[in-house]
Image (cartoon, rainbow, N blue to C red; front, top):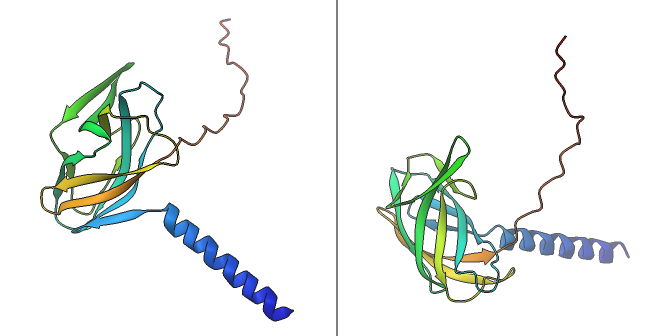
Length: 165
């Protein structure tokens, strides 16, 4: 009986590790690690989607020059910033990847815009995307369509009132 327990434990542990490795998908282009490429699900009729990933540059400075995928007419690279209460989103020609730095493409920051989607992106789907770097060359990554994690509830606080005496 003890042997059966150990076998089940090892099998369960191996399955858990395999699941973790599969869910934390990453790729490599030269000295650049590409981690967790994802896109958000879109609604029927929505022609634009967002793509996100993390780029870890372990070598000399490089630049992400472009991205392409068959699921969209084009992929644009965008920066986003806040100027007071105004959100500014601009298309850029390249995303700089300084040596030894990590650059996150995420909501509210650098990101990829999937323009002219040919069909809605559905949670659980995957699609290939080609990333082209100035020095590291091209790499095809598998983008997973994932719903964003729900925002964590903020603790309720009493409204602050200012009293003048």
